[in-house]
Image 1 (cartoon, rainbow over the protein chains, first blue to last red):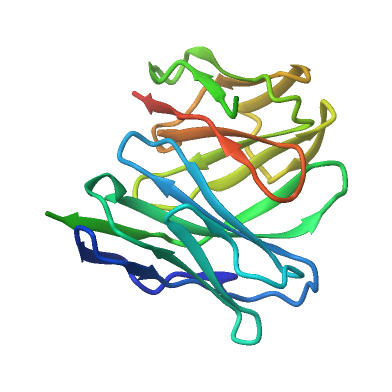
Image 2 (image 1 turned 45 degrees about the vertical axis):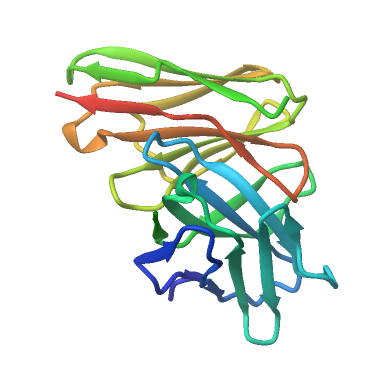
Length: 118
Length: 111
């Protein structure tokens, strides 16, 4: 079974509008973390936002916010006021096992390709 | 400075060649990673180094050989690769469990 599911292979959004990218996850580990990354065509994976399983509030970073619904096991990314530069592939990822030595495994979803229309 | 630097950015190599990919970070992170990403697929973990020791090897073929000479550097030595090894190779580093920073990647083509 997939641990991270991104059901939207591609999304279109009008410039300056908000868009929500869906992510659901599956884990029995009570301690986990959820990450969102942006990957432009250049290939670099750009860290956007993080949500820990014990965090009480939804994470926000500038125009990015994470709609974390723990009971539903969803961690949707909301991008407000979309810009042309937001066009990219977006990956949701989960950390389950934290070794405590600063290392862990990230499991990625298949990604959503976002296209921002002028 | 949240930069992870990978060199080279592009590499074309023959199946009999030996080459190395390099990764450097100066954020003081104690964990470093190699991921492999095929076209239109998500990244897949290959190796994890924690405090300069190999902690995870995700059943990667021996033609890929990682090395961590010091806490800032991570190498991936390549030998006798196959065309199906052509991919984007991403290096990452982390210090705690709340963020991991990736480099720009090396696009490898095996001919």
